[in-house]
Image: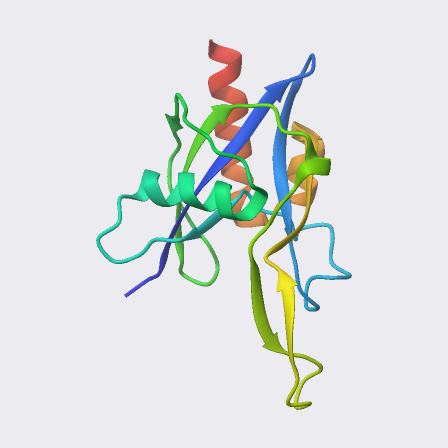
Length: 153
C-alpha cells in the first residue's frame, strides 16, 4: 500500500506571491539545493485525519502553529509512489525562528555512532519562479495550483 503524507504550503504576498519551502536536514541533503526543497509535510499516521497531520507537521518541522483558513489542493503522487495531500494557508513566518524536530541515524555509515540531525535545516521564502526551481519536481503542481487560485481571487 502506498504511503501517504500531508502538508501545508504557506504563502504570503510581499507584494507578489511567495511560498515557504523547507530544506531536509541530515547528511544526504547537505549539498543538494535545486530540486531538493519541499513543503512542510509528514507521514499520515494510521487513522489520522490528513489535515490534522498537515498542521502537526508544520508545527514539528518549523515550529509554527497554523490554524487556517485552509485551501485544499489536488493531491500528487511522487516518484516513490507516495501520495502527498496538501493545503495552503496565508501566513508570515520569520525563517530565523525555525525550530525543527530531529531524527537519529548512524553517521558516518558503518561507524556504529548515532548522530542527531534536524528534520529541516532551513526554511526560506521563494517567489513562484524560484520555488518551481527549488522544490522537488513532483510537488511543482502545488505551487502552480496555488498561484492560479490566488490569481483568481
